[in-house]
Image (tube, rainbow, N blue to C red; front, side, top):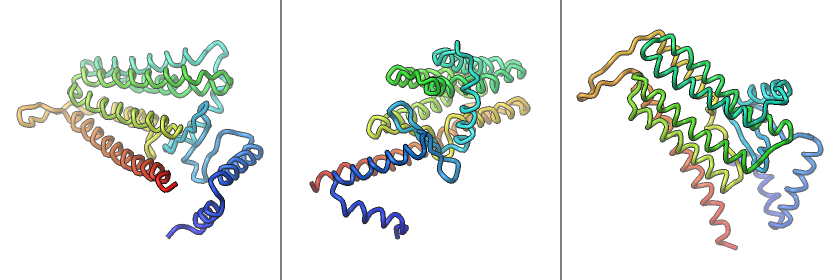
Length: 276
């Protein structure tokens, strides 16, 4: 049974024809904008953050969403004026290169693994603040920014996968499986942007920042626990092969659920036109 508020909302919508309904929604949105005076909205749980990303509605339901927004409010005014969004994008790429080098050399000497968490933090800073500083300074380049952001994210995923896949900790095949699933999730997000003009920056409680945190925990385990090999039908796999493969499976299941949910939603919206 639908909640009372939702039933009332549905009745109100049914009383108005499509044109009047659109006008009603527009008026409500304008009044809210006048009262709030901000494009940022945080729900009562504090976990969901919505904001305007140029012309897109960006939604972040990750655990760290609220914390990140507070961090952006504090850090953006303190970034030097000479540092431009493109500089931050390059910093993000340097961060993932540091991460990959740390994995490869860390298999030979564990001390090199210390580069990995450092690189992940540097990558977070560059990736999170290149668009944020542009919006803060009101110097956005919607088409350029969107294109660069997405293509750089794809390159970063490939570099990261090659880093762990060439390290000896994880087989290259399993590392590339992880990158393939992650790239598919990115494609799903981009398609939702195309059909709904909504950028979903997380899957449930997990987003890129949570993945980085998991990576840092993962590296801490690598640093202190030696590599063990297991003979699986003639293939020697490490404990990290199993961990990365398991993570890939979990991500794939999340992707499938997201595809089914979004597909059904779009199907219902499209067939409404059939009865008109």
